[in-house]
Amino acid sequence: MEQQQNEQKKRLFPSIDEKKKKNIKATVGLILLAFSAVVTVLGFVFYEDLHSKTGWCAVHGTGSGFFNVLVRYIPNAVYTVQILFLTLFILYLFCLIVAKIFKGTPRRVTIGKLIKSIFKAVIWIACVIAVLAVWGLDVAALIAGAGVITLIIGLGMQSLIADVVAGIFLVCDGTLQVGDTVIIDGWRGTVQEIGIRNTTLVNFSGDIRVANNSTIKVFVNQSRNNSYPTVTIGIEYGEDIKRVEEIFAANKEKIRAEIPLILDGPDYKGVDGLDASSVNLLFGATCKEESFFQVQRDLKRALKLMFDENGINIPFPQIVVNHRENEEK
Image 1 (tube, rainbow, N blue to C red):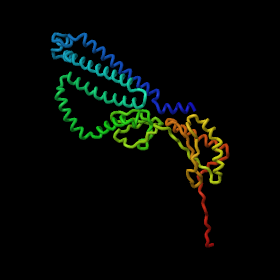
Image 2 (cartoon, one colour):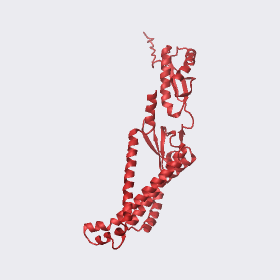
Image 3 (cartoon, helix red, strand yellow):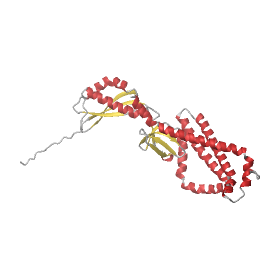
């Protein structure tokens, strides 16, 4: 049982390899932050050599040789690294503060992730504009032109705007949160992240689905209440239904003891159908949403063992063929 629960947790939560990848990304980010910090400090220490008219870069950057051209652009490169350091530092500090403030409940975590996504987009756009200004581009004209271009593009990017607005409303309304298990367009998975544009789901098998926020119009959130997995098992038409009901009632507590994930039940719900070769009986139990499939499998196993121990047959599909003799003989 513990092994099955561990396998389920591995599918629902990030694997060790994924955590290693995140650690590698974090390490690379820290190395880049440290490098840019060193360059920033050196830029302040050697400010006169870099930026004054009589500094080393100004003196050696007046020629036409390749080396002199490179020297001429050293101050711009240092400025660029300093802007990058400031951007990374602000991002790191902001994400750290948001993580501390928005923690605890899934709703708070979801809002925190959305705020970080929006802030990252804004700060990186500001970083790009600042870098372009350092290298001599007319930022005012660029922003004015970008405003016109944004207006033109915005008319053709209504779906993107709809995704952003829908994502904000999903988070603010609290109808969807990180960690919730939902069914969207018949696809069942756990919400990993609600971003600016997309919502990421991962199912029980570890498959990932990314859905645009604006397309999430109707969904089933199965995490707000306990789930109720059901099992349908057929018995022979010749079997006494009352006898089967009495056997189940006598073994009900035993089955519950064997399946600790069951919160309430198991229950016998009655006759669910009359098929061609079987009478279908419906059973169910209450459990947590994350235990849905495991409880369903364990309940099937327990009922099959109970049927075998008491001589209750589960019929094979069969076809009865009637042969009509030729009346004209």
